[in-house]
Length: 611
Image (tube, rainbow, N blue to C red; front, side):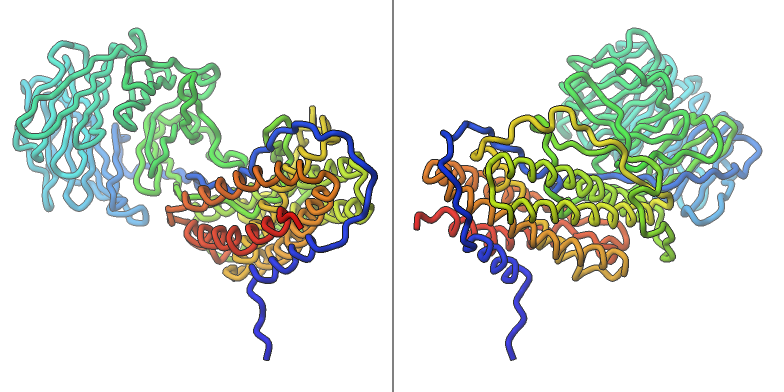
């Protein structure tokens, strides 16, 4: 019995058949131009991605709203408030329990240590540690009359406390001994953070920041004073590293530095419309929680911190207006306190997005053009019902991933339409023009299927808006430029895409995702074969000059895609990721390297051989 071919062997045979097809003969060509290399298909580049689940509002069980709360690594929540009120919730699915014995002082901040308890600070030097099953009062490191305003701990040993009149104390041994920092300022320390086991930062009411670093026992603390906001107070501060820091002022503006505080970039225009209340960290991502409850991602640009929407889905806000006062985060949770004393909880998930089997990109002036997304049924034909009970963060992640695919496939419709016109401009044989027209219809079906899946996971019908077209038809008569573009985006990109889609199909168990991937894998294989057929025809027309040009471009394309594959090292994905048609980074790395070595390279060798 004859063994069934592997997907890579079948695709190799298909592409080699495309190269061996007898090309049509055209007349002599004009001298070749210097067309620039087109960028690679960015859709298969790995990246870190974050999704936010739908917000859930809940009433606070106590009679007085909390003044601060914190989430521990084990997802237990701790809260403090006026009159010595303290609360704990062991997990997001359990009720809050009031913890007695904290005294009567107003409490301002809590640092949760999970199973190791929590630290709490408040007025008149109140400093408490929860140990086992009760609050233990600790001696304040400063005068007992000093109000303590904020506390933060990293693990059990490293902690920092800030308070009125410039009070700032740090411990490296779990509170057994405290060291005074920042004696040069008497401004209230409003926010503190242990950035690492070598660095603490503190923000003050006068808009200044102190960063203190320590090299270990036997060394002294090195302090750096920074002026940030020209007098406006600071309500939040995060040091992402010793170079990158983000601060939030009392008005909700986000200040940032990328050089350790030598220069702080002021808030960009537009941030005052929905002021930021807190900066939280989930995995490697810094997120901004706004007064409206919206969550955006903090991105660094040469002009400072830029707040960008998370993913490409329409933003999901609370069902009713809220005003967030402060927010904290756990490993996969963002919790905010609202002005009316309620809690706003949102699931959050950060994962390594390995990319997807993109359609041929639609490049305009060197950048991939994509349509905006809007609600509507024009590109969604499969319905939006999802019967499986997936976590909200998984649904949001799957919706964002399939919507990314949908936009790429939608742009491929325009890419093949333009390719058809370029084939006519180059005098290509009718069979190639016909294939490009068929491929355009394939991409319409792909886009519909992907929009259908994205809508299904998002729970709302999603469709494509207008596609930017300005300058899209420039050029196209230069055979060398078109050939290099087809090599990178079609011969390499769609060959990879076909095998990645087939791998996704084999792993998927969800019927709708599996059916979409079966169609995409088969069609992308034919598109890859068409790309190799065009390159064979182009080499016969352009001769040795074009062959040399393609050899140079092929070497660069292989090196780039191997580097992309090797960069896929993370393997954290949401629940249900593979079952619903997505690949783990490790699987994409393996498939990509196999495709490059077993399919792309042999086809390139056959194309570029002088025979």
